[in-house]
Length: 85
Image 1: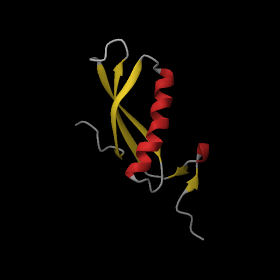
Image 2: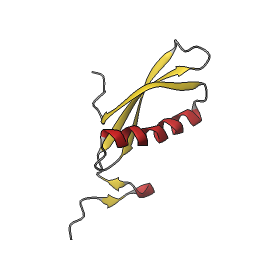
Image 3: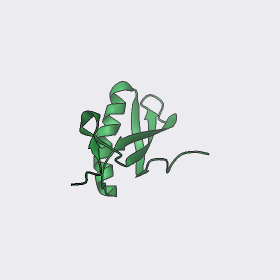
Image 4: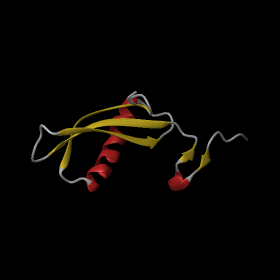
C-alpha cells in the first residue's frame, strides 16, 4: 500500500502542504501600531473555513509569546501566497 505521507515530528505528515495565515497584530496600548506576521502550519486537505478555525490556535500560540499584541484581522492561503518580492 502506498503511503503518500510519512509521519514526522508531532504527528505532522512529512510533505503535507503548508498553510499560511497572514495576521495583522496591533499593540494593545497603541492600536495604530500594527505589524503583519505570517504563521505557517502543516495540514492536509484544509478548506478555507477549517483554516480560519485552525488559525485561531496558531494565533493564540503566537500571542502567548507576545502578550502586548492583539490580532486585528487575518486571512488564510497556501504558504508563500503572501510573500513579498
